Structure formats: C-alpha cells, structure tokens
Length: 446
Ligand SMILES: Nc1ncnc2c1ncn2[C@@H]1O[C@H](COP(=O)(O)OP(=O)(O)OP(=O)(O)O)[C@@H](O)[C@H]1O
Image (tube, rainbow, N blue to C red; front, side):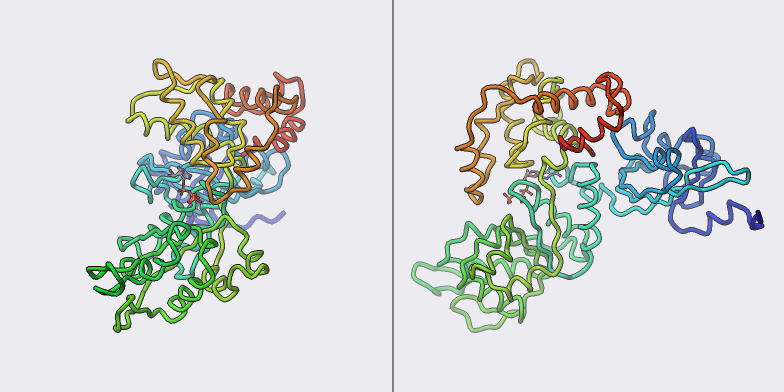
C-alpha cells in the first residue's frame, strides 16, 4: 500500500476544529493545535493522557458515566459514530459539543479513534443559575443544538412542548445567544390576558383612551423594542386578536389604543405552545397566515420522561438551589422513585415535588416516603385540562406492575454502578444487548 508522505501533526493542525487521535486504551496519541488550546495547555500536557481525563475531567471513560462514546463503537465495529457530549475546557468550563468519531488506521494496520470536535454551545452562556439549562442526555443536547443553530437568525421561532418542559427558559436561551442579547426580553402569557385588554397590553394606550384610564401606558411591543418578545401559549389567543397580532407582525407598525402616532416595532418574536396549531388551523381556531408568520422555524422541547437520565442532575441542582446551597441528600430509594415517574407536568412538576420533599425530609435526607406524586398533580397546568382529567380519572393502582418493578430495579442498579451497563447486565444475569433493549423499552437510555 502507498503511504502518503505527510507528517500526521501538520495534517491534523490544518483542521480548524479540535481534533484528537486516541488509541484502544483511551490514550491520546496526537492532538491538533485547536484541541490543545481548548482542552489542555500544550501538546506535552495532552499527549499520553486519557481522553476522558482531558476533556471530561473524569477518571473513567465516559461510557461508564452513562454517555454514549464513539470509542466503544469504533473499536467494537470499526465504524464511525456521531454523538453529543459535554466537555470541560482547561478552565473547567462546560460546553456542549458534537463529536464525529472516525476509525483511523495506523501504518501497521492498527486501529485508532479520530475525534473531530464541533463545539456548539458554551453552557456558561447562561451565567445566571436560574437560567441554566440542565441536561446532558442525547435528546436534550440535540434540542440545545437546534436552539443554538437558530438563535442568531432573525427568523421567528415556534417552540413546541408540553407544559413545564422549559419553553420560557429556551426562549431566554435564544435571546441570550442572539444579536439582541443585552436588549429587552419580554415574556407574555397570552392565555392570561383578557380579550378586552389584549390590544392595550400589546400596543399600550394613551391617556384617557378608555374609561378609567388615567395615564399613558407602554405596550409590550414597545417595551420589547430591539429585543425579543416571547408569546407563551400563543394557541390561546382569540381569533379577533390574532388578526391584530398578524397586522403588527406583518407591517411592523402599530398604534397605542387611543393614539394617532404610528409606531414601529423592531422585535424578534419567539412563540410557544403545547397545542397542535395546524390542527387548530384545520378546525378554524387559528389563522393559517398567523401560523406562517410565527412558525419560521419550529423546535420541539422533549418531555422530561423522554430524558429520564437527566432527572438526577436536575434534582440535585434544584435541591441545592432551593436549600440555599446547603447540602441536602436524596437517598437511593428516593432517586429511583423520581427517575421512574412520568411527570405530566415535566420539570416544573419535578421542582414542586422536590420542594415538598425538602419540607418533609428529616436531617436534610430525602427518602422515598418524602416523594409524593398524587398531591403534586397540580404540576399539570390548567392549559392542559385533558392531562389533568386523565390524571384524575386514571384508576389508582394497588401495586406496581412487573414492568414497573423491573424498570425501577434497573434504574437503581445503574445509579449504584455509575451507569456501568456491563456491570448491571452481569448482576441481572442478562446480556448487555438485552439490558440495552430494556433501557429503550423503559426509556432509561441516554
Ligand atoms: N433544562 C432545565 N434545567 C433547569 N431547569 C429547568 C429546565 N427546564 C425547565 N426548568 C425549570 O422548570 C420550570 C418550568 O420551566 P418553563 O417555565 O420554562 O416551562 P414552560 O415550558 O415555559 O411551561 P409552560 O408551558 O407552563 O409555560 C422553571 O422553573 C424552569 O427554570
């Protein structure tokens, strides 16, 4: 075979993104300049050390920490794999990255993993704890990647997702990563505005515009000028108001109620709904032209039960925030209970459950008995009466089904063994492949 007469280092240095070559024992054998700059200090600091130590700041390979790793795939099958990970730079700052893992052959036919790394979102973009979006499951990271990709465009964005999944948080994320960062972010819950007040809320009013109105009021469009206007629950806007909203979105112009001056609005609109707007269009309850205006790009946020592996990290972070940074422990049985629940009210419901659990706990240790689900069905928002109804009429089970018991047992073992699937499969006396199928069935997979 002909070998191209180039030096490996100069070849990988030509790539602008971080690139690293890893052997079967997770040792870094070569790293380009971009990788060293981002994750190490120099080549000498990086080469010879393990990839998980350098980019994950972890003592074990990332698949043992519950992440999908291209190392496994490349050395088991010889084929490449793309994954989403959270990496830590040499200042210990986390960032979300897309990794393209390639099988690379050495001069003597030995196999290496070549990783091309494409950072897509510094998680520190959210410098305020309240706004940090927590999660590193593949489902969540792929959603963050979509948000990051569309954040800088001026297109209007429609966020889909069940109540409490974090649509407002996502809208803030879009704003913070857009060119409008630093300008106003105004959130409005369309479901809570009375039809009679809609126009004056959105466009403001002049003094004396209607009975009882004593002063001039700025509308939300004016307050959001140069910034982002987040229209939550957009599916709840009555048809007559939809026409008025469409007019300002199309022309960029509006007048305060009772005013004669034409004002211009320079706002980027991000909308959110938990309804199927196109079905509402079919039913004549939502205007198709307004739909096209607000749904430039749509992004769906996953329900919490579709990213169960994020529940432990979310729970720990929320608890520490609620407890003013003081330590508060969730014991194993409490965590199992949390991980196997379905959360019709999503992250908001998880937060409510934890708040109650914290109040009920002894000595700062939360146990399974402190985790109360029934009393927390208020996590289902009034905007989702179907869900609330379903929860209310569902037959109350006396005992757990075999499947529920199996799911909670597997979740507990994974938690105990740091996500080490082979170890858990061995304990259960099943193959790793069978365990994997069960993880998919019970939605316990990353
Ligand atoms: N990924 C996340 N990490 C941390 N906290 C989150 C995350 N997603 C949501 N939350 C928290 O969950 C709560 C609900 O989030 P948010 O209000 O953004 O949901 P929503 O989808 O807009 O709800 P609704 O549809 O009812 O308006 C908030 O307290 C928010 O901070």
